[in-house]
Image 1: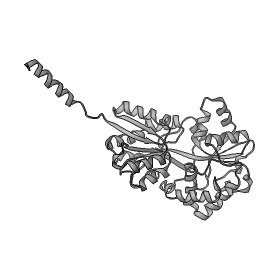
Image 2 (image 1 turned 90 degrees about the vertical axis):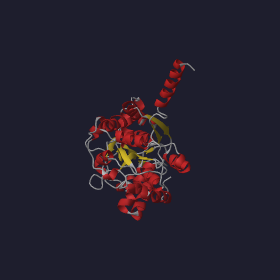
Image 3 (image 1 turned 90 degrees about the horizontal axis):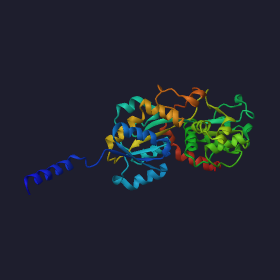
Image 4 (image 1 turned 30 degrees about the vertical axis):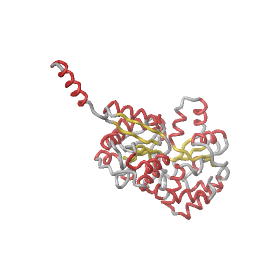
Length: 339
């Protein structure tokens, strides 16, 4: 081998070993719809150079998958849309403690785990919607009132298998205890206008069509329909109004989308960096403007439809209780015939 060839060989070997074995990345198991999170993740990648690999599915499936995968899991973050699922992941030992001054400073105590194993990233409320031509606002008050016989055959809601309803019932158990909550749920079921079916948008359309007069839905479904650009959805949404329950009591029930770093994350540093990005002002404004969710940062003001709805008193319950009472809520809903 002559001098020139030897030099070329050494240079090639040097350049090979100068390249990183693995580019910086973070892998997410996400129960959020891709369209509701991917633009934020793409912005994060552009800003940091960290590649984000996103797998979407159902939270319960991911929790089971993480149990099976154990130390071999490729996932770094579990992202989901309900505090109860994050509590379940914590109870199963799937998450790790995160020491982040950024997350602790921005996220209120009630919206993150006491042991810093999971963190709320956006806020939503389960509200009452009603048909103003058939319901007067003065007749509405709180969730407890929905069991009043005046609402007989007038309420629409989705099934008991829906985590949003389970968490609402879990919050009622936390506030009122099992017996009072069960009596309430029994009265609520007796007031159903039809057997539970469909998603929250279907409940909105049912109220607009006169199938029922009021319904329980998450606020962002109504906002999304109003801004959908689809004539049928806009028409239905315009026929109803939103009411904030419990404003003279505990406040309107709220829940979170949130995330935790997986116990066996291979990219721990990148995972924490991503969570910190998701609570920046820019990311939080995006949640409000695009997803119609409320910021977990009180400094971020709502815009658009959310601003028009005004401020409201939210239930400041410790969200870990939604997970603590989830199984009791499910059993209770079965006992009262909430299908």
